[in-house]
Amino acid sequence: ARLWGVVPAAGVGQRMGAACPKQYLPLAGATVIEHSVQALLDHPRIERVVVALQANDERAARLPLLSNPRVLRAQGGAERCDSVLSALSALQKFAYDEDWVLVHDAARPCVSAADIAALVARTLESGLGAVLAQPVLDTLKQVDVEGRVTTTVDRQQFWRAQTPQMFRFAELRSALQRALAQGQLITDEASAMEWAGYPVQVVEGSASNIKITRPGDLELADYYLQQIAQ
Ligand code: C5P
Image (cartoon, rainbow, N blue to C red):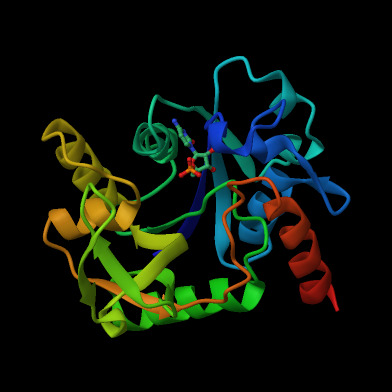
């Protein structure tokens, strides 16, 4: 089976409060999205990477990375999972059902080669889909609408999902399609796979694989990229 990459990059990045979508903000000599896409291209087994972009996205047209012959484009949709489905449709003419797809947020520029390699190794070895994730370190409170704690949950059972998330092409496509059609809340690929009844494993990733979301995250990402480069 071969490996493919998908990068949803059609979000507007409202929480960032920046003048342009967060994936186009400058970071360590490039833009956020270029670091994220390059991380997948750098893996020796990933054939091509499909990037889902907003329609008529002029900022994307200016990025040299998108003229790379290993990078394909698809039109993004209203929600993240619509963007991922659109990218998977673009892969239809290349990928076999049993091929693997790594879906990686455009907004996670600091993922390390070692973490991607660990995810790929574990998935290929077990044959089961997997996501990079981090154990929760803080104590977790369940809180009611009035802001009162109702209970403290056992944090040992909780992990924070990151990306990439790696699943078989046809299984992921059909799980996303079915979950969407049923109106399920899908915030990552794994949630569609879980809903469809597939086992999903976690592979422990690094704390530095942050998602650029709020002001201040860019400075942190810049710091992590310097650490990784050393
Ligand atoms: O909003 P959030 O940070 O969860 O977005 C995660 C990723 O999904 C980002 O890379 C964003 O560009 C992408 N996205 C998308 N299409 C949407 C919404 C988000 O490709 N409609």
